[in-house]
Length: 186
Image 1 (tube, rainbow, N blue to C red):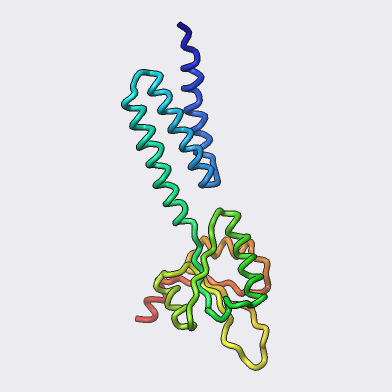
Image 2 (image 1 turned 120 degrees about the horizontal axis):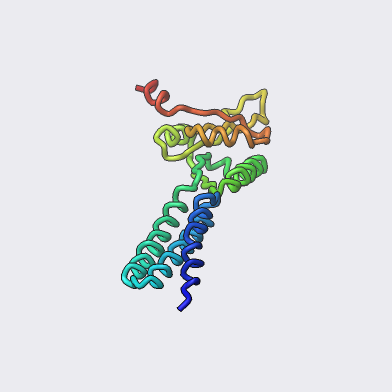
């Protein structure tokens, strides 16, 4: 009997593993992980280990993909704190949020707006790590009615991404080290 098909199936394992390692999109990686698990289950079945194949199919593939999908979905969120009155129908604010979404979409991240009623609660949310960044206009002065938004982030990587890709003159970007800020308040 010619068992050359076994070699072809086994050769798919390292190919799928390499595809998984070099995948940039986390959702595509989940699909490839499922394919890798299915190939492994097929190999175990062909080699005469149906119990191991069933375990691989149920635990190694289905459960692992489900848990990874939940982790990927929850971890790829950028929570941005904003004032409620800014979020309500402001053309410049909408334009800025569209630019933020474009920047984070490139990295497969969702932008989630969290509204606050006043600037004190907004800044407290940033310091207490409820949000990753905040965006609000500074207090209005009589001279400057079109002052840009001030965006502060507590995460260095998000600051670096926004600094290099943000082209809008609508905001001024700052990095806030929450550890130093907490020590100053004590």
